[in-house]
Image (cartoon, rainbow, N blue to C red; front, side):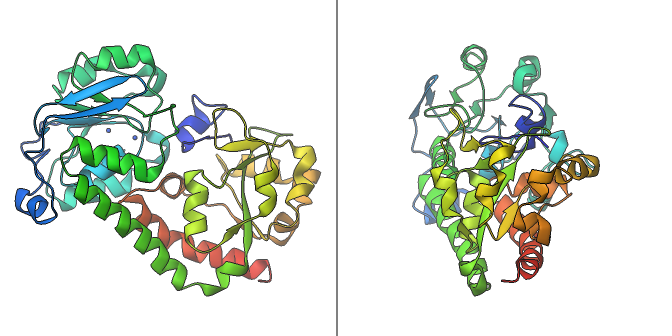
Length: 346
């Protein structure tokens, strides 16, 4: 298992400290205009300028051919009625079709062809993106570099992150994508819907409010890290009603991340966490990690009060908050948490 800072296992198992997608779509970009008007949005609200840390994207008219990089933007675009023509591939969390299941299901439900997928990250396939002839590139929660941005902005207006790579909050990302698509009011509506979905789920589990947790990770034997309360996977668990162990706030944040590397020697500082949330790259890695005396001595580990799914798609979905991943995650999360809470004796 390896660290992902603001990202799910692509950064885990690739670029970040041992750490989202082409067919020509006649209807892509085509949200229902009457629906947009009813929501207070206007598809004629262009031009739009969006400033990012890497430059300003000026979008002169409603985009028809959208490409997304990083994570979460494809899901928000789809929820707004715009199926991208291309998305960055994400093999680790994909199902047998090669697509993230919630994206595949939503696109098929809309009756659109699936987007073409291309390599991203350090191996970003700029040629494949060029061949898609996009009129907008969305990358507000991504790790694109200044060099990559300079190439992309010559292809189409490119919306990068507002501050630092992989540092965009989930609701901020939705607002950015909605603004770029000329649907800011719909974006606000999506945020409200997500908060309500999570609150409604929490209301079904009033016992969670007395349960504390820490979300941990390792980057190999002898290591231990904890995700901070602002990290998206932690935010999702918090929103389901559990409370972050207060000790997490005492750890110094590792620069450029929403996490703290505390070292396995400090595992005992998590002894008051009723539950531990984590993930493993495979069963062998899990066995190796849990056999470490200091790791195995944590009360939650000893009791088996651990939420650690072996479903890579679920791990990916539950690591980010957007209109498609939240409903996908909630119905899978609750049974896992229920089991861990029971084992914790709560």
